Image (cartoon, rainbow, N blue to C red):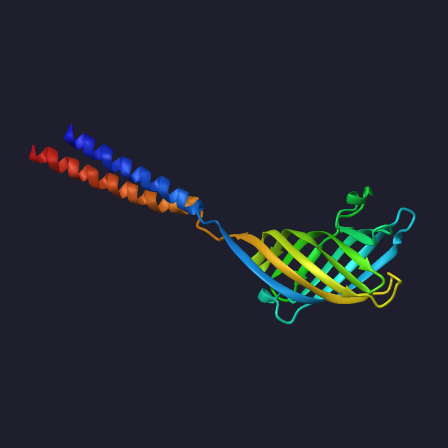
Amino acid sequence: MILRSYTLGLASVAITLISFGLDTTKANAQTNYEFSATYDTVVTIDPSFRPDIGITRATITGESADAPYGLSKFLSNTYGSFDPTTNISYFNADASAFGLENQPLLGDRYYGGSNELFGTANDQAKFDFVNGTVEGGGTITLTGGEGIFKDAVGKITFTQNDRLTSTDLTAPFKGKAVLKFSLQTPKAIPEPNTTAGVIGMGFVGLSVFLGKYTRKLKFRG
């Protein structure tokens, strides 16, 4: 009876270890990144996309000399709509935000080396034609990446200040944007089967040991 209880106790410990090993592979399964960068930007607005309903296309390019992880450039594409009563332009990667269906989803790309990030933008900008300035900001929802940012999720928030070169919005204008990155990527962790296999082998060894131990006790008895 004592031997049976001892055997069951060790078996329970082994099973617990296996369960613990499986749970360990699930813990700490992501890497967090928090960083910021300043980019020199060029904004181009194309009003010829759908002038009948006032929907434009906007393209922003950016370059940074000190962006971390090699993200020295970005390219942002959105649809846009200008409200002349407030002088505010609204931009979104999804044309359905402006009631326009059956259009491709546009996106952002942050690149420059082996690491890249992809996302979709939702932002707005206030035009001050008297002082010739534009102040804006918004959020880019991250949808993936490459390199160390493979399968990244998270967001980029940004503020941007530009200087108008003309009252004609079709003329490209330059500025600076401060981007704050907050994202997570999955960690490379051992497969659950690998961990379970290793511990399972230990459990088999334990069973063999118990078998020998049992035979010795019987022999002594």
